[in-house]
Length: 335
Figure: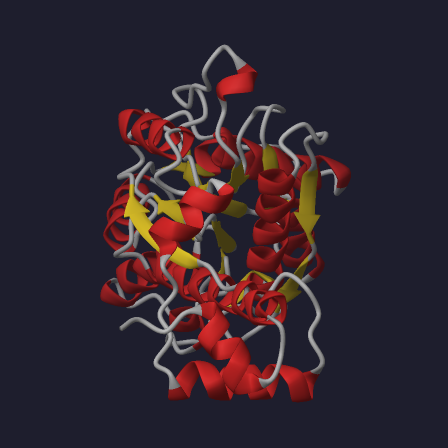
């Protein structure tokens, strides 16, 4: 027989409500009481009956996380943090890959609306193809992460314009003047790329440096192979810049490879910086200067918003900006 909440409560000497609070993780429970309940859960091998829970309160206890490409280091790190944070809240988490395809994003929104999951955290990429239903009342509880040009769903992001401004300003402060960026949009209209490009241009303007369109290296594939190919194509037609700011660390790792194959030393020949502070960047050769943010704080903010939205569908939408900082490593130097 499957152990019930009442069985756990009897063994732990608490009320069934206290057991539910421990399982769901949404109400504070004294540490000694929590320990007794968790011990009883383990002894009875308690498994939540999600279908029964859904019948009682209309919830499954499961949320979905949708990321564009689970093969990337950035997505893997974010998924790890979301799984950990969801587990601490007593939620199961279903991880989906959208391939940055709007039709998959639409399917996930429909699934969440049909109550197959309680809510959805979604990372859209192509802003001009991300479409919300016309009727806001039929939107599921959802939170967007990353940069999307909309105001109908809660959103958590790092400020891409300001982060790019700060990185470019740091490179200018090192004495660089001919600064290139890698990751400007070519065919794909990504709001993120547009905002990071805008921050870069704003920093140049504030420093009195003329904007040179040649130094905006287009690349829609923000992964190492895309960065390497775009960097090779640029170097085949243009002189080496003083510094290179890549819109992701994965792009920067690809660029480092292209530079190494040409015998160009980093940072002696060119300073290179990235964005996202993935673990691979810290162990690149040389270790990568990057824009960093607290990924766990980011995931907590997103799940806090989702929990609030599930509880109160009518609440005002919010945009939360997670603070960033510049981490300077050996891939950049003063000139």
